[in-house]
Image 1: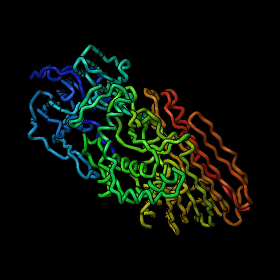
Image 2 (image 1 turned 60 degrees about the vertical axis):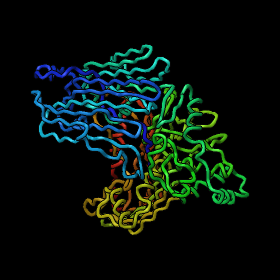
Image 3 (image 1 turned 90 degrees about the vertical axis):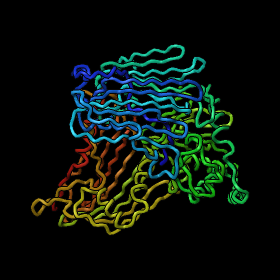
Length: 638
């Protein structure tokens, strides 16, 4: 799925630079234990200077000296410098030293490798990247990095984070931003006070500095790195993007610029296509039904491919080009669908959003270019309809945790405003498994299963199984039911039920030795044969950060268990119910007849951000569930 180009260039780290001194004593200064503990690398000193000269020019000068202690930190010496027709890398140098200050290798800009900055899914792009290549043979070593970048693209001010990533100590780091005094600067600062980051803002400059910062250590289920690291993001009210000047004095002002500079005039189609669309929806009064017809038409006609050109990669291809070529990226396909809907007299709004499995909001305090994906919103009196235009297989109006539950930027001719994407509840992400299985006299089982998945489970199952042949399906489902031995499938039928917005699976299977025979009169087995919940987060007695349960859901499993001939359950197990702040777990048994019982398991997980002091309670909650999922019962001959 598309991720629009968000940054003009990549900065791995920032901070204060000390003069180069060849003496070993000063080349590697004393490093406190607090910085080296849990550290794969140490930022000895670094400095980032960003100078916004005027609306059409910005310069970045970066220096850093880093101690690389082991292979896990090699990525800090593999710099990537992005450029395009509006961005020039004036200077680039990287040097590698041993701890005695002996030069191991020096690489200048002309020795960097030059690649197209696009993935396999990109058709064409005018973005490129310089990458240095160095393979370390001994550790530790010291890397010195220096580069200068000049750009006519001023829509993106390089952000700053005090840490380059986890497990890196920082001895000294600074970020210095200067700008013309008649510019207005928007800034988002995070966690500065927590880490005692010095910061100063005067009329035309901003300074941030951090000294002696112990490493950030990753914790299971942590918030995203930029949520816990000290850092800052900046934007200004005047900018230029790929030769096009713009202003952002308010969201309304910025939205008008996007409308007239990025979107206006890119909604033309030929007369034959216009007539076809009008005929397609003729006589249909319900605008939602018209929208569905248009959306499904679009899905059959075009497909997604990334195209990273057009005003810095932010302007969509014209609708008539998409119509003629049959492809486009998220911007192009969203704009194309919007154009078709306008012909069908269905108003819609082009919307920018941060897409990803972890929700991230468009920050309303940072007026300017944000987001990495485009969606289409069809306003409604109650719940707006959201259209993901890059996927051919999903139903009309379906979105999932890739774009749900976050703030987005709606772009309209009258301006822009921050709106919310589709808001979903935990129970909307629902998977129902109904099964009937029989335990045979040799301990084997035969089973029939029907699984229906909605919401996030729907796309998980769709992308896992849809389009596979029977052999591949058997391989995939064997992994899904890996607690079963010698698994054989008599039937696998899958159905992308677009009308019901569910993915349906119908299976018949057999497995050997599921029930363990004890003597000639007793079997022991786990009633939950198919869908076991086993995740338990890692131990952490001294949790520092909040933890995130990003996906709420409801799993319901109802199994009818047929016992072997002549066997019965002596005592029906008691109901199990765990009601917690994190969710609900419940098991209910029901005796249908002497040789048939029903197992009904329900698990609801509540998404949310929880304080660190609750982490161990959550871990105990998941440990109990894992144990109960494998709980066994005894059946004996009558």
